[in-house]
Image 1 (tube, one colour):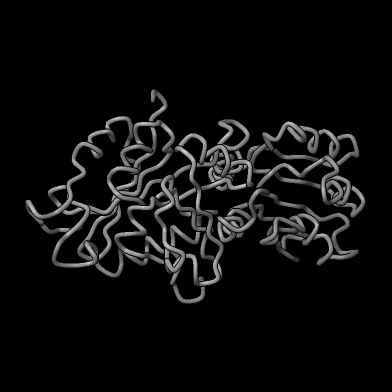
Image 2 (cartoon, rainbow, N blue to C red; image 1 turned 180 degrees about the vertical axis):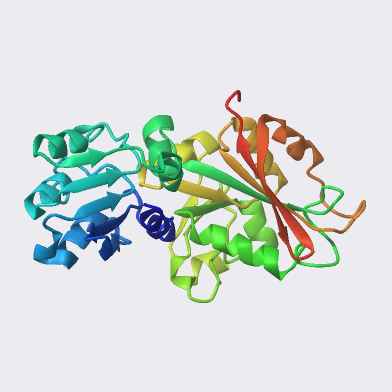
Length: 323
């Protein structure tokens, strides 16, 4: 199951609006094939491993990170394919919360006489598809907020374009690759003209959809993110309306990289699920833009991890159950 979960994690940000699912087929104590939901969201991981194994799938054990689907969508049900392949046992990390499935896949497998082992590495299975489940449960994507500050809470410096060093910036690019979309405000585009792409070697193709909130139509047509060929959306909505529209378009996870005003608006709205706070070991002083009031809103969050990134540090917070 941990191999299947590792496969699923590789596809984070690539399969929306479908979940990213990993599957491993085992026979006689050996992995005979493995698969992952394709970047387009189909074919599904289960279908891929069954096709790869051919007749050898009969009598095998399937490890899959999410309950196999049981409904007819753009592809036939994976549960039917598993039954037809003659798979003996299916081990599942977590149930699918999609009302169209919601136990139906497991029920179909059991009815066909297949042994089903449930909730193996359930916590990890739920985490892998937190965006997919967020859309079902909260009717919106899972939203992560990225903040980078100096020790005195400043997000800009008059002396340098970058607050953090290369290791922290690379981690930030990895976060971009793991989300369906990255969102910023018109002020950031006007001030910095950023690309907002993933520029890690080998992962450039995983750059997320760029979304700019621009209620006043200020973004010039020659902005870099409108000229580089990667997908970009400019929205004139207020924040709640923008999130509603983003959800309608099938986005399941969003990384917010914005200035103090929009960052604060997200925190005040209660829309943020996770915060990645990068800290640089410098003091900027009066000349920098301060976000102290914004950061005070992190009282609603609990720190779950601390990572050292060269000279910089990263604190990761999750929204508490009480908020």
